[in-house]
Length: 238
Image 1 (tube, rainbow, N blue to C red):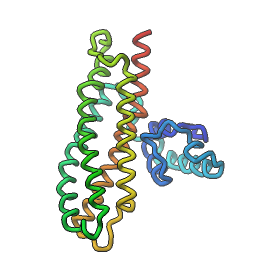
Image 2 (cartoon, rainbow, N blue to C red):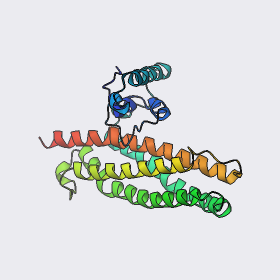
Image 3 (cartoon, rainbow, N blue to C red):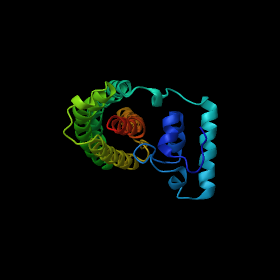
Image 4 (cartoon, rainbow, N blue to C red):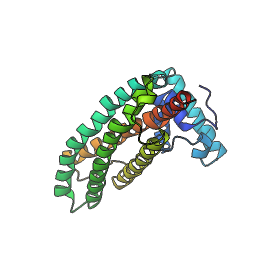
């Protein structure tokens, strides 16, 4: 892949997810805001953009190009992967993280009041993410599977075009991305304080892992699945 200042962030990460670590290092959102060019992400500062381009090229050279090439996967297979890996992860980790946050707030909340904000944000996100996954699984994903089977005419479509639910899902992705950016800031980049117990440290590690998985999850949908679904629908309705 030829990387330059006008390369689109989402396309770079879609080509090789290892480049996500470069964007994360520079605090560049590659999932929810993946439609920007590298230059735009660097505020069109030439030196900064050139440095980012070089680091991305080095990343590709080190990894030999790619990991799993999700761009070549059939969309129904990609949906299966998203559901079984990322949807399952979200549901399981919500159940696992919740008691940790409860305990940490109870023990350390008086000395670290930001923990109560983190807990409230996570619980709000857990509720909304649960609803979000459900909508994808019963509305959007079945429609895309029908298209993959060549059954567009028989697909149950109450939303007009696939663009409509996709825009809703992307908006909800933006909300969760912003929510976890706030959690990251409140937790000082998931850095436990000096008086943190083991539970406190584990809790922050789990939150950080949850955010990283969410980034990859959103990337697969925003930058690969959704654009391909829109393209497929247009080709089937010509």
